[in-house]
Image (cartoon, rainbow, N blue to C red; front, top):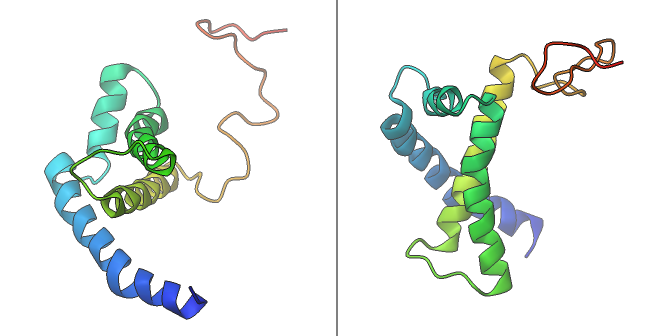
Length: 126
């Protein structure tokens, strides 16, 4: 496949389908007010950061793609749909990180100057 053939596939087929699915599924899951609301609700219910809630949804599609590559995929949804869903979940992660002002970040949440806090505690580790 040439670069031009790939760009044509992306531009004329995959991207339009991706955007259409994102709009319809996004509104069904989160409504029109906040595209990320579904992740925020799930994160709150599970008491985890929003990116962990996002990751659970993303991994579902990753597992399907992995099954396809292994030859074990049996699903009513064509693999193209899973690829588009994964792409859309990456766009949603970009939205989550943008909302947190972390999209351009080169570090995780914890700054290099913070003292690590022991899990389950509010006390810094030594």
